[in-house]
Length: 306
Image (cartoon, rainbow, N blue to C red; front, side, top):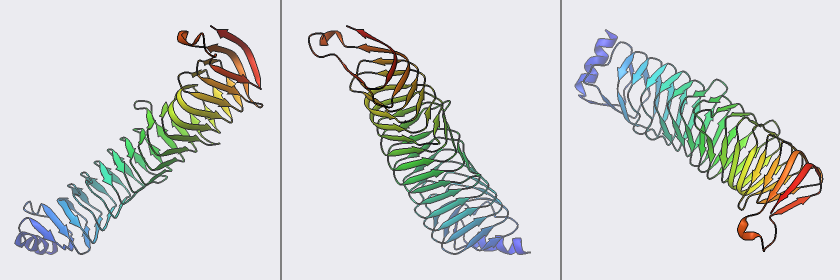
C-alpha cells in the first residue's frame, strides 16, 4: 500500500514533483520532472528528470533521467542513467553512472562514470573511480587516484594524476593550466602550457612541447619533440630528442638516445647524451649564427650540418 499511496500523491501533482519523499515501489509514468526542495530517497526504478535540486537526493535504485540543475547534494549508490548538465554543489557517485558530467561544483567519483567529464570546479576521481570518456578540465582542480580511461585535456586549472591516465586512443593535451603527473600516463602528451612529470611520473608515449614549459623529474620513455617553449630534463629521457623552431631543451641528467637540434640545446654540467648529437641550422641562416648547442656535459658523438 505504501507504493500505491506514493503513486496517488505523485499523480495528483501531474508531471512536476516538488519536495518528494520516499517511493518504495514505483513511480507512475506521468511523473517525469522533479523540482526537489526536500530530502528525496529512491529505492526503485524511476524515469525522472531532475529539473532542479536544492536539497538532497539519495538513489539506491535505478534512476533514468538527466540532472538539469543541481544546487544541493545528489548521492548515487546504485545505477543512474542520464547526463549532469549543470552542477554547482555536490554529487557523489559510488557505483555506476552512465552519462556525461558538466560541473562547476564538486564531484566525488568512487564508482564508474561511463561518459565524459567537463570540470570547472572540483573533481575527485577516487581510488575505485573509473572514467571511460575524456576528462576536460577548464578550471578548478581535478585529482585522480583512480583511472581515466579516455584521456585528459587540460585547458585551465590543475589536474593532478596519482594513478593512471590511458591515452592510447586520444592524446593527453595541455593547452592551458597545469598537469602534474605523479604516476603513469599510458600514451603521448602534447603540452603548450605547464606539464610537470614529477619523480614518480612515467610517460610511455612521445612528449611534444610546442610552448610553455615541461619539467621532467621522472621518466619520459618515448623521447621528446620540442618545437616551442622549454623542456627541462632532470632525470631520464628514453629515446631521441628533436628540437626545432623556438624550442629549448635543457638537459641536466640522462638522454638515452640521440639529439637532433635546430633550436636550442643545452647539455648542462650533469647532462649525458648516449647517442649522436646532430646540430643543424636552417638554409636561410647560413650567413648568421649557427643554431645554439652548448655542451658542458657528455656527448656520445657530435655532427654539425651546415
